[in-house]
Length: 387
Image (tube, rainbow, N blue to C red; front, top):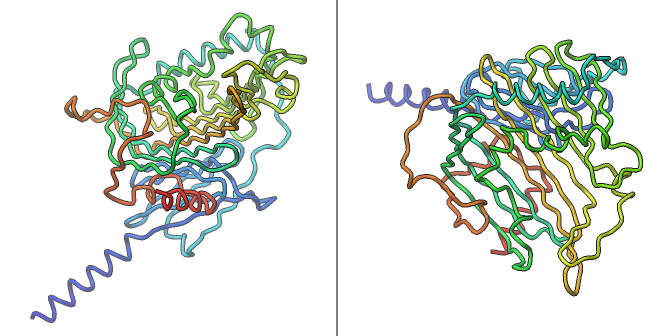
């Protein structure tokens, strides 16, 4: 009898272990075989959202079988079952949805007015109250050397409304490695976690396009989106001979529901080349700047999925110039509109995770929703060893 029970528990344990498996996907372009970054991978069973890294890689742990949906604004959506992922590294080829057949859409309203309507409606549609489980990751480089790294697992409790939006942060785990030069001001370090969600949920980064003068500074063009008839793409680019450091914007939106799906912006090399270097003390000469954010509509729920920001600039100081590069990632791994209770003492009130004492209970970064690349792993390890 004891032998039978032992065999039963042994078989049960092996079966349970075999079901709880780590899955790995590498997403590549079907034509070029190049890795695809920033693809959203949604695991239906766990309601987890993942984001592919610059190597196209996504890793996750799954108990049982689930439907998986892979989406990217430039590729045809793919749906599959997790039980087909048999290899250690499963390569999935995505077919480009950019056909060159897109056409310019002629509208009675100026595109800027259309954009204002889309933004206003998007703000109203975003699901609040809600809780976002978020993984953040940040790399800091100074004078070409990787100097600092932090990441953290947080719960953002969203409440209020579009006119009085508020956020409470519950910090679960975090880690920080490296040293920060005290001469570098805090305004260049990391997200300001106290207002980051407000910026994303009010689309603050699109404010320059809403101003009256934007019509004189930018060209607005709306194009069709061959991959989805319900979507349009709005291209907003600085006019020729612009004298300011203005971004190029690409805004993907649902023209029927009037909500934003994705926003990309970057400062083009041409724009940067037209700028004169600043020489005054404390000024910054930007040589790289990009931003990307993705939103998801899941039935009636509409929420932030991810953001990625990179900036590189030369800071003018008294006796020298300091080169600074910051790379930020922000991924919502799970969404919930259930009500939660917590104490005010549980709320994280600092602006960033910098100088926050490490709290590591699990290898949370392994199931973070954003797999580290080989290069990033080496950077983190090297900084950790310097502690």
